[in-house]
Picture (tube, each protein chain N blue to C red):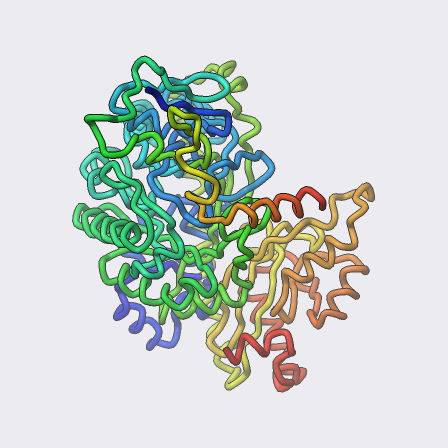
Length: 92
Length: 505
């Protein structure tokens, strides 16, 4: 079982610093999780630490490929509002 | 503007009673004079603390601290843009080793550089190893550089011990509230004890840590400046209480800054349509928070990797590939720097002495005006305390208030340059109206020269252009224009509509 980091990662190092298993490593274009080392923090913490500190929605997936922090869950911006804003910005 | 020690109401009141506070009789730039010598010594060559010093001394930030332990509604962690200038934005992340090299390269090439700050792009104390390795290296290899750090305060109490070991004499804490209910509208979550804690509960922990950190720093004699972001409708009224509390705990300066929120920044506030304050609202709040005292009004809200004089960014000259190619003899650089710094201090001292003479002379002038209403005026200056910039070249205006009490510095207003010296810019006209908009509330603008087109547009907007005081000291010229207005009867007219709202507020 392992979590994974996908390409919305902004390389902020926060998860790297808090991983109890040293499973996270710097890579290009973004940080990655070593599936052999990742324990999903079982036995160490109640919640996986990388997903607990990550500021970017949908950047970390659980073992089933589902975003640990879904859209709107961290910024508080309703996803439809965000989509609307981006659409308007792009049309300018 | 005077930079006043928070918590020294009595001293400030005593000066006011004597009828001549430094900020109200001409020596607006003399903001250091009310500080105790020990603090003045520490901040006199710090560009961020003095409207005057920032024209002479430079600062830089190194982006070694990417991780953050909280989320603020005015921040978007996805952002990385070289064309933007605001906190939290950065182009190139550095390792501590690269940051030390870059700092030495900048210090050797820009000898006026006196201060190195770590301000992000995340929170410096959420990156303790990277931040402190940088500070350790610089304390050893470049002991003539002052170090400072800016933090949200969550990890501050556990960092105070380490902070006190380095050449750090200023810490800035961003404190936007002391009430968790308000905090929950600013901070959606914090990372604390291995959990993400949301809402009021998270805000309460953050507030407690900030206050504790502030007290611990003051106990150890480290200067603390408090930054607050003014968010209209969220914490604007509340910041008066914040100011009172941090002042009573010993912060030496409170810097109230306007919220920057644009939809394209993708921040919560930007997307949700939270507006920033109008310049007049910011000024009113700064006045209210200051009480009898002045506040920091010239903060330029720099990027986390800014390099150079305040308001400019020379970061492009010091990118990683460029500094790799530089050979720096820091021992030799330190000797040059010491000479340059001494020269600047001498020049500043001379100016100060001159201002004191002028200030003494200008008191009767100001006192001659009784019961005339205060007037805001904008000034185009490239430094040195003089009116010495062409209207069209000004990237910002300094705003002064003239009243029977004299002249005081109020703040600065950024403008888009409308004139870049040629006609290639097709948006010239709209940019000009942009600079006129930025002068909202001002009744006159003083500059060294001004073209015909802006002249007539300014007049239409009810702002009197004035190019008659070129190369004169700012405060004297503002006072002279104020006297002319009084004598011509302009001050008996009601306040122009644009300003009426603010005055009644």
